[in-house]
Structure formats: structure tokens, C-alpha cells
Amino acid sequence: MTAPNKDCSHDRGNVRIEIADTDLIFREIELDTDTPTGGKISKAAGFSVDERAFVLQWMNDGDFESLRVQEEADLEKGTKFIVTQADSSNRIAIDGNEVDWPDDNISSATVRKLGKIPDEKQLFIERSEEPDRRLKDGDVIKIGKHGIEVFKSREPKAWLLNVQGKRIKSETPTIPVVEALTRAGFDPNAWIIILKVQGQPKRQLDVNDTIDLSAPGIEKVRLTPKDVGNGDARPSLRRDFALLEADESFLGELGLLWETKEITGQHWLIIYDYPVPEGYSLTTVTLSLLVPPTYPKAEIDMFFVYPPLDKATGGNIPATETRRSIDGLPFQQWSRHRGPGSRWHPCRDNVMTHLALVEAALNKEVDQ
Image (cartoon, rainbow, N blue to C red):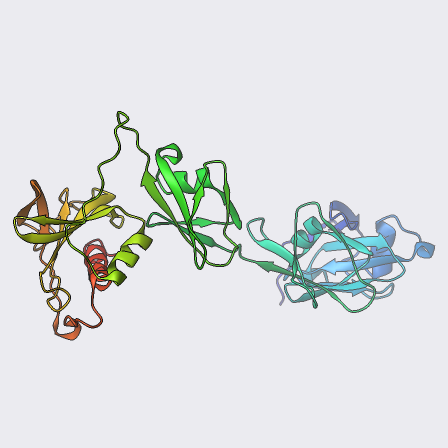
């Protein structure tokens, strides 16, 4: 025996159904039969025989079925009906579900209701010779007389931007500079803001500017501290020894301040405000690498950070107990060495590849 549909309400032999025009504002009415025809439903909705009403049953599974005048509706499949005066219908499809729509126009809001498309999804109308058009709230679409109008919902596209090592996501293709820096955790008024686009000169941005994330080649936003001291010029960064050209180019692309210092006969590369992954007690550190005199023939080994890093959740970080004095500051030594499968190769390894190992080591300790 088939269980009765909970959507079909019976009272003394009467059945309650819901009826709406193409505005989808439903009202409840009573019928004296549980097998109403399309003609009986249109009459209950207030239409005469001469008014040629179009009856569309909205199934519980989201499908739609038009009813002829003498055709009986199966109320077990659904008790909602769209009834309107129309001589003909137009074929539309919503996420693959085809509907004979009894009007020449349809609003984006109606498409969402018919397709049960949530607000957080984007709605598009398909176009064959041009990009699909995204529909906005309030849009009304004139349905073509030939063929079928196809509507599709999509998850919102994520636009990513690297702001000084911090990746932020935008649901729109443009983002104000102020919003980008604020979401990345930076005070927009405290930095010189540089936009790097592949194949183009670096461009300084103003806090009132907007970044077009859809433009090809967008790479990152670099930040340099503004001079907010007592008016004296910021001391020039030291270059006590030269790095490889590839190293200096890569460090320039990082957008971080760096120096090469000779301290008590040793060569140190010092990188300021180096970002560390989430999970540590700090967000940036000063990173130091000991560069051998015969580099790149000799390998760069380990790395050193100041202030020392701790996990935000507590817990020991192995092989970081040693402190090394560098330029008068107690740096934390991370004793991380290359394994047999990643031996240093002077023709392909450099500062960039070693920083990849640094990043991997930092991520590993906080399971990133």
C-alpha cells in the first residue's frame, strides 16, 4: 500500500493544494477530489474555459509537468501548481531541468525559485557566441521564441591575491586596496604599496585604488614600511658581499628588505619581516642564512630566526634549542639538513631553493 503524501492534506474528502501565477506567490485552495484534472485546477484558480489557462505541476523532486484540460494530476508527486493565462509556452532549462514556461519573460528571482538555487550561488544565462551572462537580482529575461533558454548556477569564483605572503580570497574580480591590506592584517596607511604584474613595471598603489584581479599576470602586492621616524633617512641596506644574480632577482620579487653582512668573518644573508605560516606565536621573523665563502659550490645549511619561534598551541619544536648570536641578537637555530634524496647541487641550488626548504620545515611543524 502506498503511504499518503504528507503534502496532500485531506479533510472530509477535500484536498488542499497550492496555486500561484508566474510570480510564484502561492495560495492554498480546496478541491473536492484527489485526482483533479488540469481543467478543474484552472477553474479553482479562477479561470473560465474560454481563458485558456496553462497549468504546470511542480513536482516534489523539482521537476515540472504541464497538465492538459482532461489530464489528471497525481497529487502524490506534488501539490503545487503554477496556473496562468497563456496560449503557448517557452522552453527553458535550469541546471539541466527543462520547463515549459507559460510566459515570454522570466525574472532571475523566479529562475532561482524554480531551480531552488541558493543566494550564494551565481546565476548565468548561456550564450553561444559570447560569454555566458551573469544575472543580477532584479534582472528580467525575455525568452527567445526559437530554441531553449538555458540557465546555469555556479559556485562563486574565487579570486586570489598574495599580499606580502598572505593569500586572501575575493568573491569579486576587483578589490579595494584598503580591503586587501586590512584582510591580510596590515595597516593600509603604514606601508608603501607596490603591485607586481608579470611582464609589467612595478606600480605603486594608493590606498584609494582598486585592484583588478581579473587582469592577466597579477602576481602579488609588496609592502615596504613608510619612513615614520624623526625625519632622518632610513639607513641604507648593507651589501657586504654579492649573491648570485638569480638570488638577488628572487629576493627582489619577494618584496622583503634584505642585507648581506660580513660579521666576524662570516657571510650572513639577513631577510627582514619574513612571513611564517599560521600556527606560530609570531607572524613574521628576521631570517638569517649562513652563506659559505665558496657558495654556490658549498651548500647553505640550516637557517636561523629571530625572535625565536614557538607553536601557538605550545609544544616542543625539535632541534631548535641552540641559540646563535648574529649581529648581537640571539637567533634560534633550526637544524634542518638535506637528506640523501635532496643533496645540494651547485648548478641548480641557490638561495631560492634553500628558502623552499625553509618554508617546508616551518610548515611541517604546524601541519600546514
